[in-house]
Amino acid sequence: MSPTKQYCTFYLDSYLFGIEISRVQEVIQRLDLTEVPLSPKVVRGLMNLRGQIVITLDLRRQLELGECPPDVTQMNVVVRNGEDAVSLLFDGIGEVVQVSEETFERPPETLRGRVRSVITGVHKLDTHLMHVLETERACDVTEWTERPDGVHKATFREKNA
Image (tube, rainbow, N blue to C red):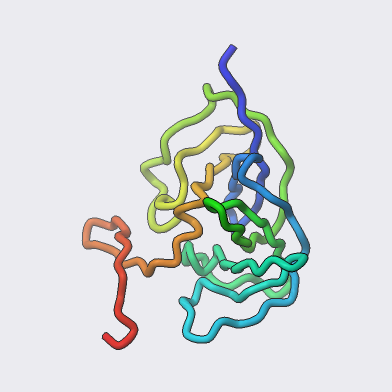
């Protein structure tokens, strides 16, 4: 029997994402945020999480999925990114799933854009395709540009350029 892994699952637009359970610190309702002047558009603000200051990133903006519909109350998923905690905004929470390595596949060729750039692959579940989120890439606030071949490349831009 092949080894299994557990993932916390979350919804964002029409996608189901999974984050390895060991990377998730906690899931909480939306908290008040303090804006960060001159920050990239993906940075929604800072939150005080029981005395710890945590940056909150909007994955919809990061992945160019459009703004969140007004009737959706987003959830904060606090993940460990190295030694830091980062909050990622998702549209909804799923469940914890246990999957076998046998169901893992590379990202589909039809998947384009920034979503493809932040996943390591997919697991085929009974009713959904779970996109395995690479949290380090998802937490990168570097600006992206698209090359003519459709591949996104990270670039650092000078603020005064």
